[in-house]
Length: 106
Length: 118
Image 1 (cartoon, each protein chain N blue to C red):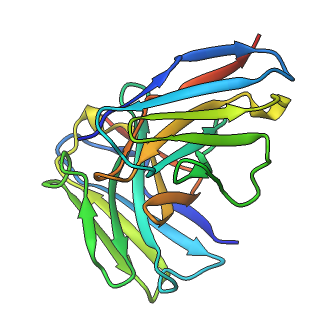
Image 2: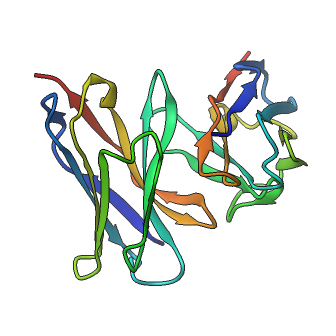
């Protein structure tokens, strides 16, 4: 099983700041990695797939990068609605999720 | 826009079978090349993929749950279902159904909390 490790566990930032979230895989997943956003009481929402492709309706301030074992989700300028928990998920070898990064208001 | 809705008991006794149904609206389980999936979420283990099914009934399951999981699809009712047998307290979770494309989960139900307790 491929283990995805997300860091940091919590990111405390202010609106307008840049957020950089990391996801590291225990073995290569090629570019087969997605990012999801989850707000309290809601289901996760797909925001990035195949490492760098934004899902339908996702604002351009969200971007993804990486290949192999190291991936990054960047939110260029945090909006109030972006404070949430973010998960990565790989599809290269079965389907597994990371433990999440909480982006909270500083 | 497709919508998914989970339904089923919120409380299941230990050793019994957890059964949930996902009703799909605004789309068909028979259309396209989608798979239809179940995922659960617990505070301790986070998000865990349970298994997926195609419109033709082809399934694949998480190896850690495979011996206890059955997923089925009913195209006439536009729904798919999850059965998880021999449940324990560790199976207490929010269960989500989702539409899966390219092995990513692009539409989700709102989630159904299932507790395992006597």
